[in-house]
Length: 114
Length: 114
Image (cartoon, rainbow over all chains, first blue to last red):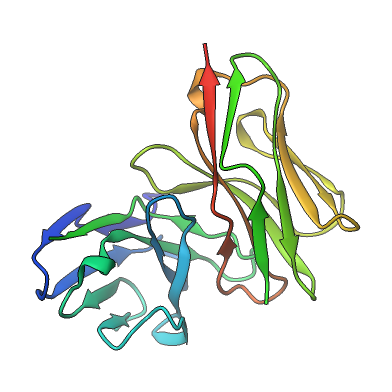
């Protein structure tokens, strides 16, 4: 079991640029979640997938954000026209079915928008 | 809607002393309860969870928590802390039997004093 992996671990971008993050869940997990964590706060839910289907999106996920999980395995989170307020840690988690919602987190991608 | 309140943003404690990190939650329906730990520059790791049954839950690294329904609390305790316990601790809830988003508190930073 290699755990949840995220790439890149750090990303620095200029305001207005697009960025894309990747998450590889634990292989047998069919649920995948994205959270955002800003300094001094707990993680906040963004969206989640069950297999390929995106089942819920938070109001935090503006039109500039899009997430996909095309084959029910890895997922990508894209932010278009980045703003300084997008600077945060983006966390991915996965869980198997019927486990009492035990989610396993990756190390996160730290985004800095300059 | 569910919410989580962690009553202390920082808790300093001497090494080998006991510690309690306080957590209260609000929900009109039954929830699962979690404590996660986040070491510097890392993702979140599950310490323990309460799904049902015994109200005293034991987790990893010598931590335990007690679910108190009447007080809507889920305080985390450890009888003797070590320097390696220095981290941010997050209390969290999710709806029972839903396996969707987890709602986190703002976190408590545990400082271990030598």
